[in-house]
Amino acid sequence: MGVGPDPLTAQGVLTVTAQISRRITVAEFLVRRGLPADWPYGSPLGRVAARLYREAYGHEPSTAFRVIHGRFRRVMAYRSTETHILTSAWELYGSTAGQFAARPAQTRRTPAGWPGSADSMRWTPPGGPVRSHP
Image 1 (cartoon, rainbow, N blue to C red):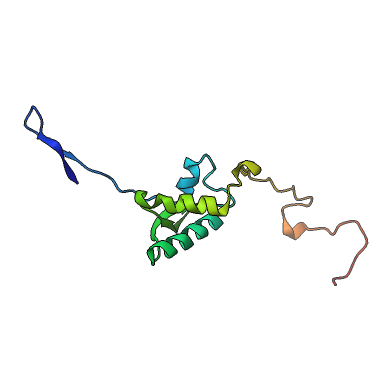
Image 2: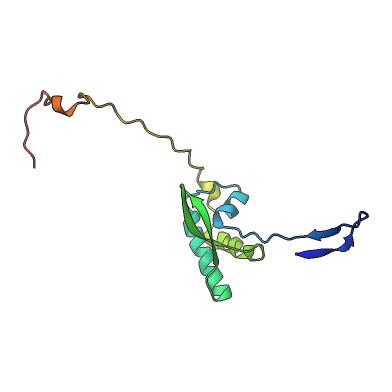
């Protein structure tokens, strides 16, 4: 939290400016690049970024919790001053965004209807030849 050059306004109220240091994840980096957050190659890109971070700073990147597929997962997170690591990982891993179309949203498949009755006590065998189990 820092104080601006003129801390007092005309009304005599103290003006305080706060700089938020939000960490960025690989998924957020991909969204900024115009790719979907669940891009299939996001996880390998994250591993490359973590390796570059370890080589540059000598320790593990910080972590954050994000909701992925309905569950909280621990992911690597980078400060805004460390985004050069993500850019280097992007260049090292290779930009394949133009080669692959975004995946369509998955829809639920409706299961094929059961040809028999729903009551197991009234089950009747199918009308074909009887075969033994293997």
